Image 1 (tube, rainbow, N blue to C red):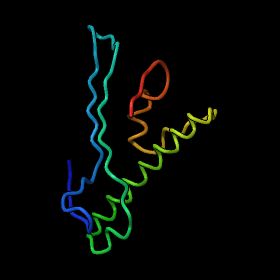
Image 2 (cartoon, rainbow, N blue to C red):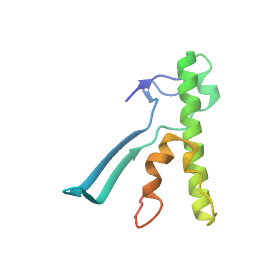
Image 3 (tube, rainbow, N blue to C red):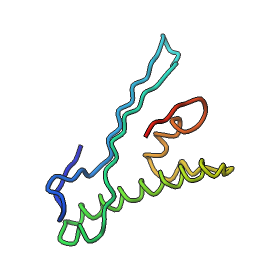
Image 4 (cartoon, rainbow, N blue to C red):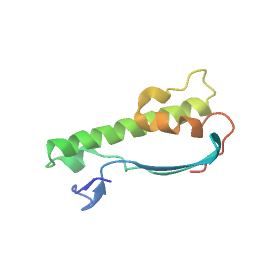
Amino acid sequence: RVTSSNSTNADSSRSHAILQISLKQKKNVFGKISFIDLAGCERGSDTDNASKQTRIDGAEINKSLLALKECIRALDQNKTHTPFRGSKLTMVLKDSFVGFCRTLM
């Protein structure tokens, strides 16, 4: 996990962390548990004096959080299309939101 400092936090995470445990019997998957630690939303004012890479990381964090929000909104509103391809985060978590699953936040 990558960390860096910004104006409000000396040890700010620069990425999301996902740990997935698949429960298998031979080749059949019969369960999966996902533990997700989302990086916090990055405000532009927190990265004023930051390096270019820190600003890019912040933009990517915000992009993936926005994509997650849009997926949750589409599911809540029973839309015909859910935009899971909006980020790598939502593509990885897709099976946590559709089908026979239970999700706890």
